[in-house]
Length: 281
Image (cartoon, rainbow, N blue to C red; front, side, top):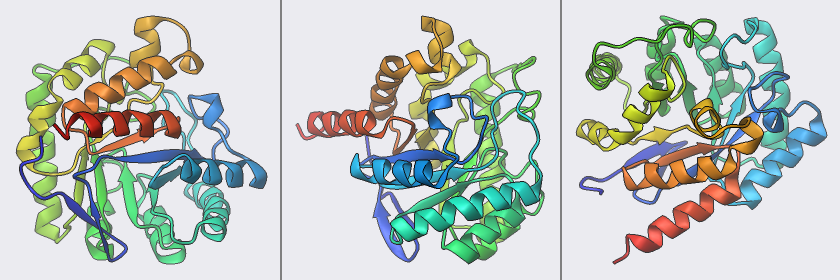
């Protein structure tokens, strides 16, 4: 699958993405869509950090603003307060860990990088919700996860529509990547944005064509963990969606995913290990 070197500069160290990596989700929110991922107390946050690393996660993605459809707005001050609390625990427990911050706000991203040494910015809005995000990323010189979303978290699932889904997402990435590069940003990771302004059919169409995003020659992140594209198809709730998640992780790796953003780290690491074994022949 790999036809070009895939490295990102993470805090001055090169991370080789020719072997897929697992990013564990740490939500310091009271209302994330999957109840099992909500970490509030210091003990819960510390236990989650320990779990991610012990189970083989190589990145921790911390978020303090729930972006599930219809989620309540959170002020910048509240988001920063939650992140400061969570990151102080992360850095005390695992000072060398690779940490990504899940935020669409430039000021929040800057605070996390400058005050807590966060190495990656993960922006669900692709700079659409804060016009200073791209210049901030370029100035901070940290890897940036560029995600596609149609609409906003509040309205994105009301009436998602595309005339040509794949073409429109590709054009979005082409435009945004050029804007970032023009500003001097270097390490860009693409995330097709499963569940963000997409119907169930849109999500599976996107997944079925995932390998086509290789034309950008950029690392690819997939975030499908326990999402509605699984439990709406199979029945149940996010709590019932682990088996379906594992199936989609295997498909994603075979179609070129470099990073899996997950709730269930051990299971995702096992999928990566099996995939790696298969590709040795």
